[in-house]
Amino acid sequence: MRLEHMPTVQPQMVQAKDSLGCLASGLHQDQELAGAGARFYRKRVESPDLSPVFTPASDRGYLVGISLNGGHRRRIFHEHHASSHEFDASTVYVRNFADDYRADLQGPFDFLLVEISRAFFDNATDERDGRRITGLECVTGMHDPVLANLARAMAPTLARPHEASTLFVDQMSVAIGTYLIEQYGGAAARPQRPKRRLSRQHEARAKEMLLGSLDGRLSVSDIAQACGLSRSYFIRAFHDTLGQTPHQWLMKQRVDMACGLLVQGAQSLADIAAGCGFADQSHFSRVFTQHIGTPPGTWRRRHG
Picture 1 (spheres, rainbow, N blue to C red):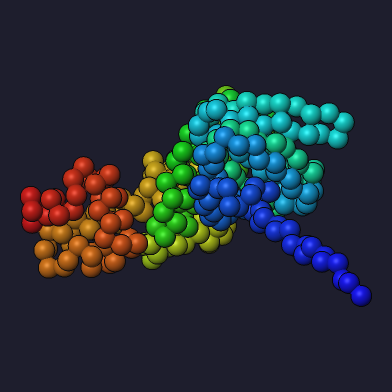
Picture 2 (cartoon, one colour; picture 1 turned 180 degrees about the vertical axis):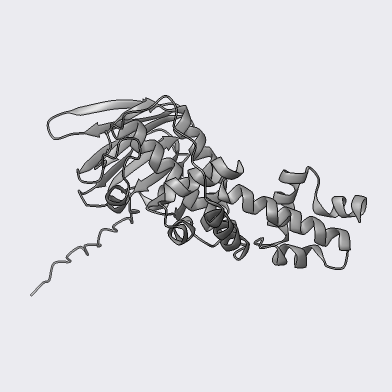
C-alpha cells in the first residue's frame, strides 16, 4: 500500500499585543508608569506601515492620547460607520474603554497616553459646583495645547522611571485628571477660583512629611489624608500658601541641603546624591544644574 506524503501544517504564530491593542514588536518606544488614579504610557512607532488596533470593551475607564508629533492618520470603525482623522502635534483624543475600539493606524506616531481609572471619577467631585463627574466627552483630533504641555512635562519622567518621584507623578495625575474633568467632563468654569490656604498646622505637617521622605516616594494621597484634605485641594492650597507645588518645594530643600554639604567638602558627590534623596550621581547633577545653573562639582570649586 502506497502512502501519499501529507504536507505538514505549521502552526500560525500569534503576535503579541500590548494592553492597548498595539502590536508590541512594532513599538520603537514603549514606556509605562503608574500614578494616583492614572497610568501613563509613551508609545512611539517609526514605521509608516498600516497597523490595525483592537481593544474589547472593559471597565478600565478612559484613555486620553496626546500626539507629540504630526504626520499620523487613523481610520476608526464604529458600529455603523467609519471615520478618518489626522493628528498634528498637540492634538488629542479621548475614548471610553466601555466601548469596543477598532482602528487602522497609518504613518508613524508618538503618543503620550493617560489611562484614567473608573475609581478616579468615583473619588473626584467637581469642586466648582459640588457636582460629581461620571465620565468624559469623547473627542478625536482636537487641538489642546494645555494638555500637550502637561504631556511634555511628563515625558522625561517616563524616559527615566528609576528617577521617578511618586510625589511628582501623583501631582501630574491630579493635574491632568482635574484638567480633563474641567475641559471634557462638562464642568462649568468660573473666571477665577478663590485662594486656598493651608492652616499653620497643616503646613507644618506637610513639610515634616516631605522632609521625612527626601526621595519623593511619599504619595500626595498620604500627605493629603494626614491633613484631612482631598488630593486636589491639598495641592492647590499648598501652592497658594507657599508659591510652589509640593514637589517643587521638596526639590528646592534637597538642592539647598546639597549646597550645604558641598561647601563642607567632606563627602563625595555620590554620597551627597544618596544623602539628599537623588536616584544616583547623574540624577543629582542634572537636577542641581537645572536649579543652580552649574554642575555641583563646579559649584563646589567656586564656593567650597
